[in-house]
Amino acid sequence: KAGVTQTPRYLIKTRGQQVTLSCSPISGHRSVSWYQQTPGQGLQFLFEYFSETQRNKGNFPGRFSGRQFSNSRSEMNVSTLELGDSALYLCASSAGTDQETQYFGPGTRLLVL
Amino acid sequence: AQSVSQHNHHVILSEAASLELGCNYSYGGTVNLFWYVQYPGQHLQLLLKYFSGDPLVKGIKGFEAEFIKSKFSFNLRKPSVQWSDTAEYFCAVNKGWGAQKLVFGQGTRLTINP
Image (cartoon, rainbow over all chains, first blue to last red; front, side, top):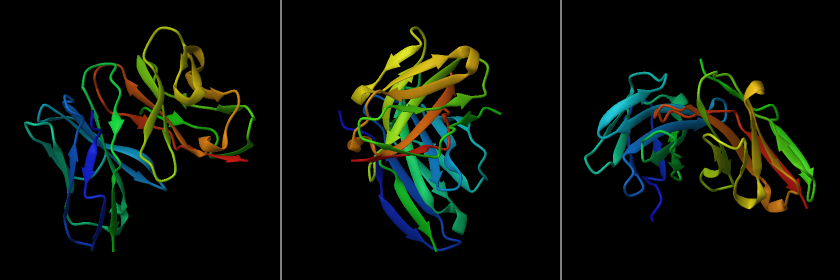
């Protein structure tokens, strides 16, 4: 089974721009979660989508948004980028039921200049 | 709010030494517990997990962890480390009700000297 894939792997943007990151979950998985990883704040939960609906949300501003498609693929969008948005963005997938493990993708490294 | 504490930020050991990394969480209800590892240049991988049952769980590469409910702890252990265990280790918790939000500890960087 193929693992979680994320595109692009690296991205450089400037302040004020917007960015869209993509995640393809493991086949059969219906839940996709997004995390932000930074040296200062560690790994922080952004949001989770299950069957095209946002089921959980972390404490991030509204500039961070996401969606999930009928094939379970998910996108994350960050608008009006700030320098502090520079981070590794990780996507994780799971079946979405209780007692399920999340499997992580390699991440998209975003640098905001 | 739910939180996870990893007491050691950076641990340096020699090969063949024994390892124990501490993890404590604050949530009092039903939880699922995980240890993930991030090798240099690689993505997060699951080491082991605890959902219910035997509180001593075994994972990959000789790692094990013990869930002590009374202490809200889930410490990671390995009797004899190898140079290839050099990595960052993350403890994570989620509520056992289908929610997929993982709360992570700050991570412990483990350096093994050959």
